[in-house]
Image (cartoon, rainbow, N blue to C red):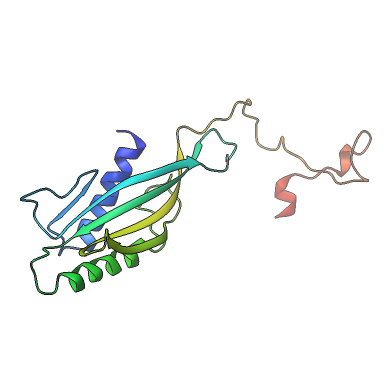
Length: 168
């Protein structure tokens, strides 16, 4: 399974477990005639390069969007939709989805969708570290890393070098 598929499944499972009042939770879908409401659909809506961590992973700044839809014919549709959006914002606080390649979520916006009070959009950003870590240098045995500080460094001062354990 790809990292992004794993992430979308984790998002769906976490939201469904935390918000059981939602009849439908899914990714990359839209509300269609006959959809069971209330419903929440989430997807990635923007990707841009992040700061290169230097370990071989691709760092991606991802913007996610969740769209919450309730039955518009219900007398309290606007209140129900905004309540669900507020619950989602709370759930997103420091959310990692229990996945090690995802940094914590940062909510950026929550508002009614297209001016319709029975549908809300919640946006958040997360940094993703995708791909495999790379270490192109040969592994060294323990104790091969030593430190020295000027002026006690360089040729003739090897006896002044210290291992990382010496600083603990």
